[in-house]
Image (cartoon, rainbow, N blue to C red; front, side, top):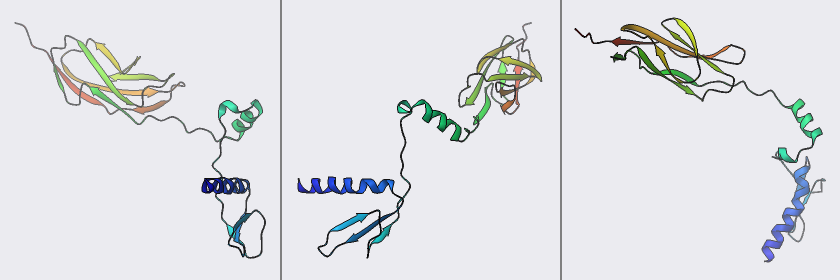
Length: 173
């Protein structure tokens, strides 16, 4: 019980120093350790780190948040890490797809609100609404597929590699 009381008292004594820029410590003739924000003969200066303090956004007043918004650094622009055509795979041969190609894009992180996907199928651009979609009238032969993500203003954010694949169709005699 006595130890707990001493620790609480030491914590209370040290609390004002958390706000001070300088702190000093010394031991008196009776062996009692003292702390102060003012120099004392024989005291050693204690290096204090900057306090790690923050306030909850829900507790801030309107004036505080307005000041913080002005002083805050601009947020780093959003960036996608990767974009690739997952299906069809590169150099993959597809058999008897009956003219309908199912496409899957792998995008990390997920598509953000306001961002759009533009796909180039055999060099022709088309807009799609998600990372999984179908392209109609894909017949036998060699085809190329590439995708890119556009931001709200139409600027390209990321582009996949061109993915070449083949479509084979059995002939019915």
